[in-house]
Length: 346
Ligand SMILES: [Zn+2]
Image (cartoon, rainbow, N blue to C red; front, top):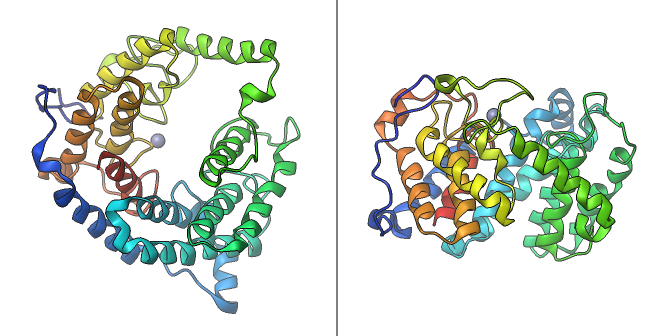
């Protein structure tokens, strides 16, 4: 059913075979074309003395991972890691370096902002994490420089209440910093940080699982309210990565897998979002639900569903009925996130 938040999902569900038309040959050119369009739409990055002024004047949000230039650099890095784009690998990585160098300049020349210096999605930690990945992928030994800057930010977010707005969340808090550290550990195969299992005593691990259980108890018919204790109105519910079921896909533990699968069913019904193509509250975020469910279950049905959602992004219905984007290049709201998701579908 079409609502003010989502398009009706009129696709047939999985019948035992994947979509033939969504082969690599058909979809890879769409990814390439989207990258060219994103690179053309980027604002001037600055450089030299006049760039210093421009960088200082810009807020960190314009440079950060969520909606800024660092998000585009990460998307280019991500696509460059796929064998399908091996021919463009060097070019994409060089573009990513140019972009992330501008972000790092903005970090260093801008006004030091205590709230975003150690932020993953909106500030410095995300910029230095991406710079490390890009430099490392280019085979540059000086990747240790941005890595050192990332490590140094640990001291900023170590105090228990280092932010007034809540120090443990993903966008600017400790959860984000740890998330970036985990990505670096995986990609660089370095022992930057151990996983919390290795760090925490069994009694503290139990606290973590009790927190997850508490969240599971807040479920209302396959979804979660944006605020604790709020009642969900069915016809107007949020099914977004940022607010709702798609964010709650947490674990392969058997007691949570049923919940994950039910979240996925709701996302199949209500995940063709009108807010745009991105990850945060858009169709790509919904498609990521299916990619994760495929990882958790191995069921090809979820690849099929992700293919259908990717296909929908290129329909006239989506183009005519979705909200106009503020910046097409944003990783979390625009087409950089869409490209990330499409690369996984391939
Ligand atoms: Zn959102």
